[in-house]
Length: 126
Image 1 (cartoon, helix red, strand yellow):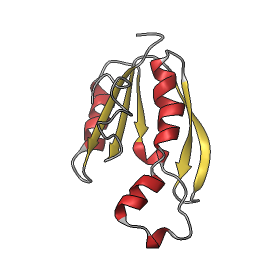
Image 2 (image 1 turned 60 degrees about the vertical axis):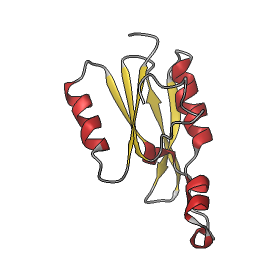
Image 3 (image 1 turned 135 degrees about the vertical axis):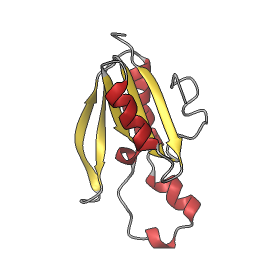
Image 4 (image 1 turned 45 degrees about the horizontal axis):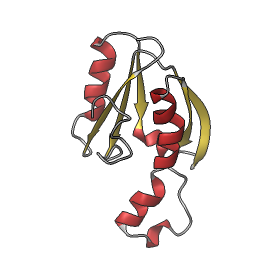
């Protein structure tokens, strides 16, 4: 499927087997397959994070805008995507990752891919 990637989003609670399923698809699916982790789309922690409610933390840390603009929209428009990965150890955005617009792109993450308008029409399989 050159020129347009099939985008598959895998979501679930911690320990549900998302990474295991994504790794199985990567190992046994048709090539080429690219695996993208939801953890790459977090934002750096802020100094006052401990005072946030769980909902505030969820909304403030996961960067939906970067996910959509740097990964989903480019892949839907048949161009390669380029996104900046969050470095957990350094608490900052770090290296850039290239994702070709071909084959299958599997995006897995813990509660990172809500079935909302963010994903409807942008993923082939949720």
